[in-house]
Length: 67
Image 1 (cartoon, rainbow, N blue to C red):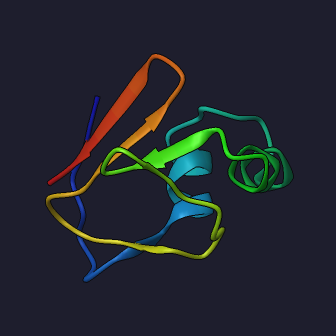
Image 2 (image 1 turned 180 degrees about the horizontal axis):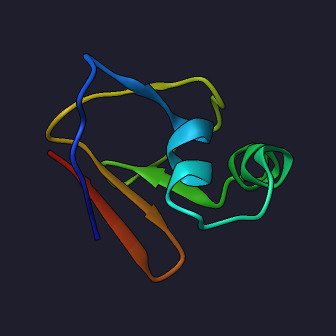
């Protein structure tokens, strides 16, 4: 899955919600807090981490490439 960034960055929890990987923003935050989100291959636990072009986010089998 690819996400085209139109701003300098997007916060991690907003990206997950925007792509409809969860039903609510609260669910996105719980996924992140519980260590289920990988950012560039490493666990990311900051809900408001600024995601920029060139990064890869993985949640389970879903891989998001930010371009």
